[in-house]
Length: 297
Image 1 (tube, rainbow, N blue to C red):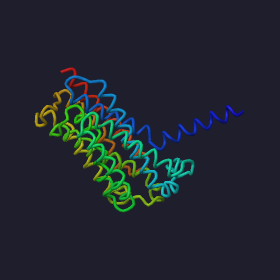
Image 2 (cartoon, rainbow, N blue to C red):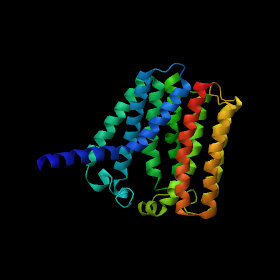
Image 3 (cartoon, rainbow, N blue to C red):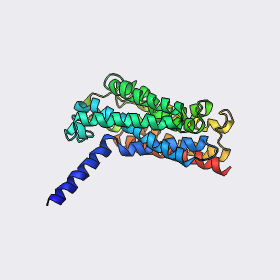
């Protein structure tokens, strides 16, 4: 019996640890960072690749833990978040703060071991997510704009880790993921509108599930597609995309645009969920196409 209880407690601790650091989100961010690294590097250094993966995970984990500390009372009001460790009372604020602080120190230290610029951008990401985006969520829909900045850093971060340089190339990677986040998060804000409302969060650009929000979602989807194919025209330094890959990326973008238009036409929760899934598929496949394009040409 005691062995069963011990096993259950261990499972609960591991589960809460995964939840406080949002492990699935952290893994997707690490994926973006590694893709950016592969695009920027000439010869792959697997030690640097490993450091970037761990540093990126700690960076995102810290941001998420700080976020859940700050929003614990609001999280308790929403169905989506009420079972989070801090909001549900399974983890104390002190323990969560210790985890967040350790992750911050580890993340920045590991990224610094790659190069100082990488650590700087990692620190900026944690600061903006925690000190700007999180408190603004209950104040203004512009929080999505602010949150898109740290959200766009990982793709760029990989390039900086590979080259120790910030220029047009990582700037372009930043722009791609920056514009992409608007249709992605507005889709989430749409289908979770009622739940967000319980917590007092303003996530949609007009504050409502209306045509204005749907139109802006379409506009930012178009911007995402256009920025994503810019490297094919030779304006982005050593970041280049062959015409065939650019066509693939463009077609992937049209797929996301289709669902953005469907949201405008149908104005339903289902349409918003489909757009969210399409947006996740788009950014993941785009990064894969970019990396494959580099290594086969």
